[in-house]
Image 1 (cartoon, rainbow, N blue to C red):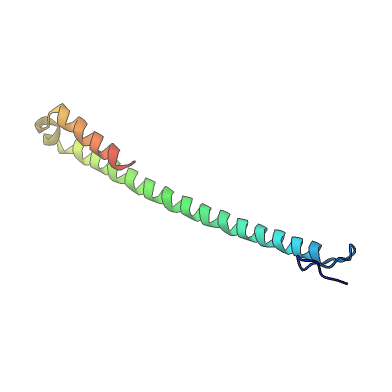
Image 2 (image 1 turned 90 degrees about the vertical axis):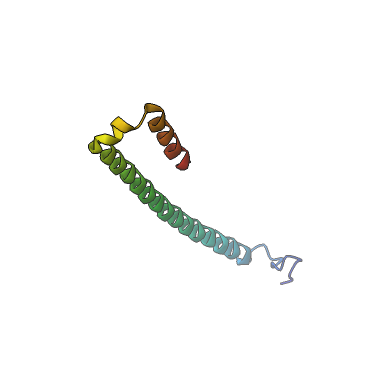
Length: 91
């Protein structure tokens, strides 16, 4: 059997191209599964980060509400500015 310029056998009954194609498909499948697992793990980490930040904001709000004096001493514009800065920091 003669090899052509691609290194495949000229014999149409040869199984090398099919095996090579299957090997490539198997490797692609494996790589895609690994990529999906990495993406899933990254999504879990992001979820944890968002939940931690949300918890911190809820705690800040609870502290603000329970302090009593903070709401009396702070003008509404300052409270709005503070909220705006916190929202900008999340983007």
